[in-house]
Image (cartoon, rainbow, N blue to C red; front, side):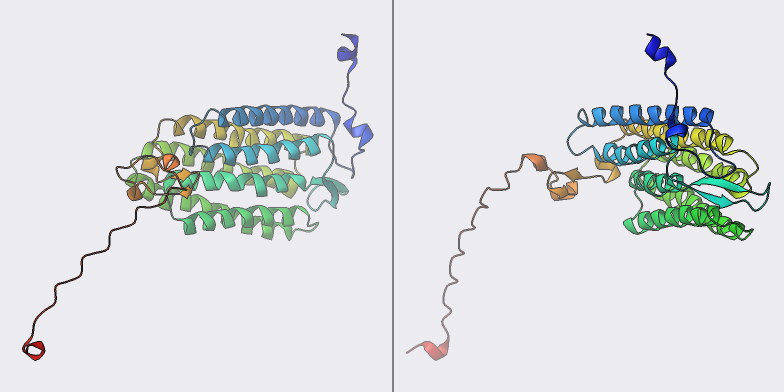
Length: 300
């Protein structure tokens, strides 16, 4: 019992922070808490995967990726790893600790979210790829801006924020149009609106944290940590809950052990999983030869 009480967070002693403005122990404690929430959520989603029906695990797989990346990223940040000092440009002179691993988390972890919301809406693969590319442009631009020491960082901020608005417009227009065809307008609006709203708060967070250096590194982590929890773990469970009320076949999600097969190919037949792939198809009997036609030339 005394060992548990005496336990302290030695991460910043083992991995000393860099820069004049950096993470403090209280901030590391908060990041360990976020890491624990991500890790617990990851284990729950992995467990739910084994209870999901065959062919209905695509969203479990996607959120496993997001939560796994988030767990690793927050473990690194709580350990005071994955950062570099960058000279401040707008506030007190000095070096500020910038965690680039944060952007790796967004770059990789948000991609499955965009893919999931695209699959639910029923938009084309071209639209899904477009939305994923916008997410990458958004995060990459902000990472570039965070590593710039001059006021030119705000140019990258504008580029990234513009990519976010294009992404939000795509989710709320193209996605909504196809969702109406699938009669899931309400469910889709809840999920897409939820995601777009919390993503809208990120430009404010970046502006006062890595961009404007208005708040401390620890305060920035508290702000963004809360947003990340709502954006990934809470969103993941919201999708997994709502998807149980929807029919996969009506959403054009045909994931089977033989690939993505549309029900039109098997309108009344058995489930694709029950078809024996080694069975020899029946050979059609040869058609009877047509009777000879008698003409004046071949008569005697």
